[in-house]
Image (cartoon, each protein chain N blue to C red):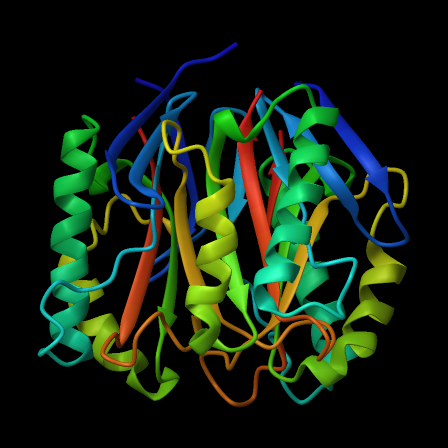
Length: 116
Length: 116
Length: 116
């Protein structure tokens, strides 16, 4: 049996789970939803940085990213924040699709995994 | 080369794959689609319990959950079944988005991974 | 600290990441978007074969597949290409939902993981 570490449990899910050398993050949405898609993406990526740090890793060891956009027409806005953030020497795989999210105020949601 | 165990193969995919200490489940939909979203979620979570048991694990070792709702407005209905089911001492990460599913009768689909 | 190998980096993500005995592929779309959903699926699955080969594995060791369809009504068209491709002795788990994709020309996107 292998060890599982769970970070920041909330009411119904936690923000990160570590197992077998990999940290799995929840789907993150912006804290400040007054922002547009680019700002919300920056907000989310900052949360991801902090969450990865808590697990002892960083975006330099990111493996996968799944991105949901409320409106796929805002792909370029999300990418502006992504491009400014991502470590070009250590790119993850990624898939981006459109989806309505938990509330209409959310323009983008991102879920990542990273190696420890 | 590592071992892979495949459970309950169907025509085009199987219901669970075990590899490297983790079991990956397929996206599960309800067997009884006469039910609403809360009932369909309960139905799915019972199937997940059974499938995890077959792999020798349980929801206490769940790592990730991805939830698709036919109508994101039914978020609370899904969560009522989720909240009654999830092991609060062992919460997974989760991401929930809206998506049309394989048939219009399906209100919710859930895909999980768990540690052995 | 475990090793990560990244294949075919592009501007903002790479096409495959290998870590801990598993290869994670990006969400793949068709190169030839003049084709319908069945043809686009064939195109994607051929790309997946090539990408898995590059990592030293194959569809016989596929673990998971996530499929997004621009129009879930084209489920059967996607499945015709899938059924002709998948290794029936080694079926992955799968989840298929509808989603608008990065451009309107894309009818289908597929993301897989495989064991080395």
